[in-house]
Length: 390
Image (cartoon, rainbow, N blue to C red; front, side, top):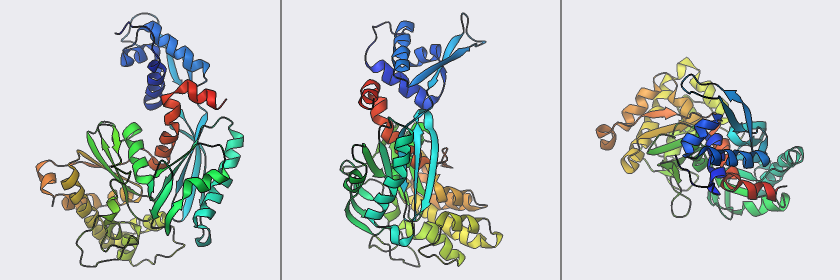
């Protein structure tokens, strides 16, 4: 165990530890962070004074001699806002350390209210009451189904919303002045959440694919770090072009994109269910998956999911594939998992090194990934972030 004097990173490391792993005893924290008992105590005191953690009653352990050790946990109060924009709906919630999610609200976006300005208006309307209810919130992260420049919030294309070259961060900043804003791709945020808190925590290389609406998004995790690519556009997996007997034009302009063959629209097409501007994709998918007469539609879609995964496994050689949202629901349908795995095995890489396919460990990985992004400044510099917000 280190006996070096207390250094500045210790509070950050301690806060991140209990944020990710939940309540731990003081003794366990010292062991995990390799801190002397005195250094652990100083870090705990600092974070307690900042109102970020709390110490509970001592916990006795049959494996440990001596005095019971106090249990340390994050203080359960909202710290940030997290939002998810879809092509037909919008969700916002207040989120605290330790994935404490509250005040979740979801609203449907009618076709006339899907313009950038209208979505920014609606998001600001939902955020303002939460900002009043929880003074000191440090920021708002927004998950977007878009190819965008995350630092400046410029959306290059959000195909399923019909947006091109939209300064979305600027629009939102005009409506929520003074609030730190963090726009990001939704697939990348799902990967971030699963890498920090979910199924990808132990993976060396994990591919995370999901569909919460229409289209398919993705993210790549390498040794616990999300890979965004040179400009933040990595793993636009839904736009892999796959051979198919029935080519379909994608909103991106290409033909036979993966998402046109394996998302909600594809399943409903196989099932003979109409898909319109007012269809709720998740509800429609759930209805088809629950219908015992739709086995053929489910199998056909599972085959295409497997075909897309075969390409990704060949290119990226992951040791784990994680499916979220509707893709997870399709995976769990009777007989679908076997079809997906069979499709993957058309990849010689998958045959040499079989890749497990699992579903997300988190109930709302995109929203929790957005929260993780917004919490990053607080986790990196607790004193600075809490002082800045009063």
